[in-house]
Length: 127
Image (cartoon, rainbow, N blue to C red; front, side, top):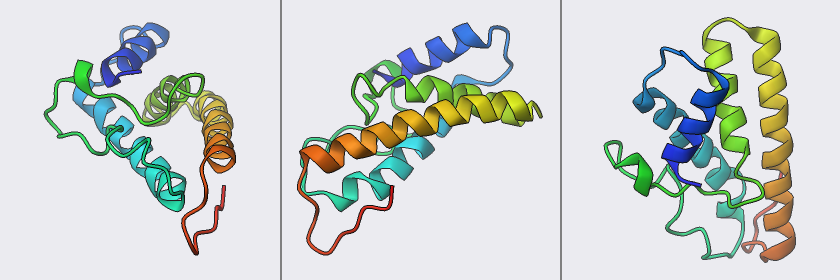
């Protein structure tokens, strides 16, 4: 999934929102940064070495930025964006629901990486 696809899907769920694409892209960069720090950096895999919004430039074209987590886990980004928008608008219950779905999918991605990639020497998974 690209950053543009995630943003378009989130916009479809929150039509008429006033958040800019750049703000949503920053949220995606944060999400991928956390996944890289908590999951990818603890494994020996090279598969995710060049993927992720956290590695792309701030002004990169959104249709060229491939997000870190592949399908079937990539739906987490839409939930993350919706949760961030809801939280920014003070919709706590709605944000909590979206972020719970994000956490479930990101936890699934972390488990997938743990099962499919050997851990880095001395690294401990905490997810």
